[in-house]
Each structure stands twice: as C-alpha cells, then as structure tokens.
Image 1: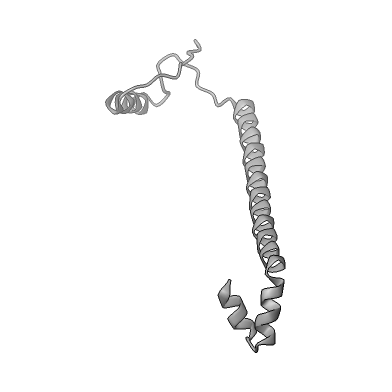
Image 2: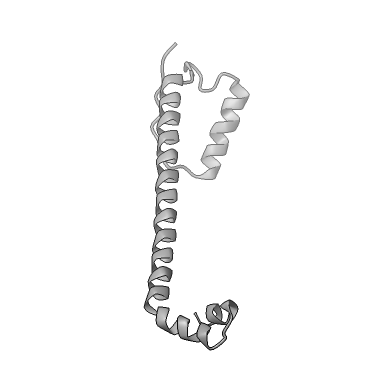
Amino acid sequence: MTRVRWRRQTMTAGTALRIFFDCAANQTGVAGADVRVIRRVAEGEGAILTRVRTLLWLVTFASLLAAALAVGASSAASVIERRTEIGLMKALGAGSGTVAFCW
C-alpha cells in the first residue's frame, strides 16, 4: 500500500465534513492509504505537554508565594512605622478592633 502524508492546512468546515464523510463511507480512510497511529510521536508530545504543564504550575505557585510574602512584608512595615501611634491609642483605651479598623 502507498503511504500518504497529509500536510496541515486550513480548510473550511464544509471541506472537513466532506473528507470525513468520504472516509467514513470508505471505511479504510483514503483509498490506497495505510493509516497508522504514530504512537511514539504522540507519547513524546504528551510527555512534553505534561512537563510544560508542571512547569507552569510551579511558576504559578512561586508567584503566589512571592505575592503573599510581599503583602506580609508591607503590612509588617506599616505596623512597625506606626508602632508609637498604636501604643498611644492602646494607652488611651482603644481595643484591638479599633486599632485594626484604623488600618
């Protein structure tokens, strides 16, 4: 049997449907073609996609951790800068809720 190689090309929906129905009617695909699944290529692409997906998840988690640390550092710096004001408010009888509400 002859091997037919198909190139990727853009086609309209009508053309794709016509090719699909012709192949379905023929039951063997394109007449005279030996159609086989290229398992090694498919598995290789799957492995690459899995690695890329894992890498993207790691980058996502690292950026979320960095953002959380930045927010925490900013909050800590704000509290340290206003330590005297917080102490004065507490000395005048303000509760923790009142102090937290101010910031």
